[in-house]
Amino acid sequence: MANETTSATIDDFSYAAIIEPILLATLSERATFLAFAREFNLVGKPSSAVKIGSITSYWGSPNDRGAGVATAFNATEAVEIANTAVSSGGVTISTGEYGVAHELTDNVAEDTIDSLDLLNILRGTMMGALTLAMADDFAALFANLSTSIGSTGVDLSLAQLLAGKNTLRTAGVFTPDGIAYVLDNQQFLDVESAFLATNAAAAVYALSADRILNYQPADNNGMNGDGRVASFRGDAVIATGLTDTANAGADVVGAAFVRSTAFNDEQGLTTYGQAWKRMPRFETERHAKKRTTDLVMTIRWGIAELLDPTGVKYVTDAP
Image (cartoon, rainbow, N blue to C red; front, top):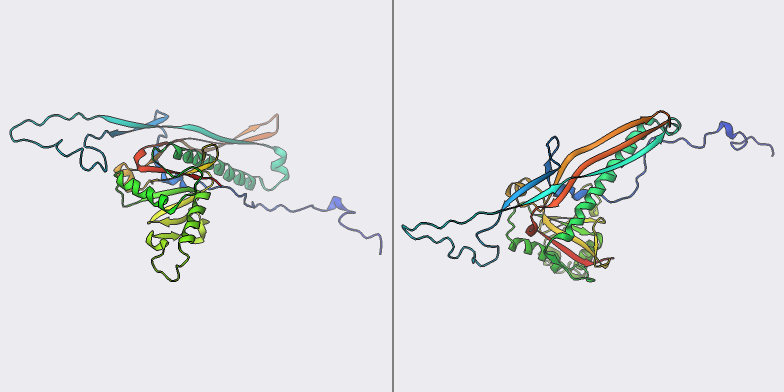
């Protein structure tokens, strides 16, 4: 047969495709560990920074075998007690501005999917981009922690993972709410591989390494909404690709630290604090002569280390 009428011959009457108002996922990191930092609200207050004070210890240091209080506070009957000066320190969290903008022509709104659907899609992706930028700045602070565990070019070991929590305990951290581990993806792979290696006889010996160390893989291998890949000694383990590198890219930097909870915040133990000056603001602006519309989302936010001894960093081999 010949001379058939097809969609190619009357293409002026055929639609190339019907665009559904849905969006396929674009794979990216998740900012799940932002909730581990204590929040301070500066919205409506006449400052772009918040200062949190502390009292400098005059009673010694943790794990000093009582040297700080051995005789310092002994009193003698009828003899005046000498004054002890009280001094203070403090940490300031400064806020910075983050923003993302798109400029859409009128043709985009007129010739694509419903403009309201498009607006909602773009607004969601804009917020996602800003939260990732915030989480990246959070992870960059891990390198500033004074206590470092691990060796350059060497994989993270189970002993080193355990040493993080023991180091915090001997530093004086006391919290029933526990800590959080935020590890680079490679560091978590090192941990999983180490458990597999030490549990070769798990079916025979009940006291295999994962049981002794109370290691529990999370449901769905960490692909649930909270990003938790495991629990270690009762504490959440988060794996992420947002951590920074160190030693000219040879290593990656993860951390174990006191996370924000009601108790930890009340006791002043939380390692990191975040301050909000402007909550996410979404705005549009029309340009009539250009026939375009600006979509702009901004926030003002900052993060800082509050209490250095309540966190440790893991510096270990990169992929």
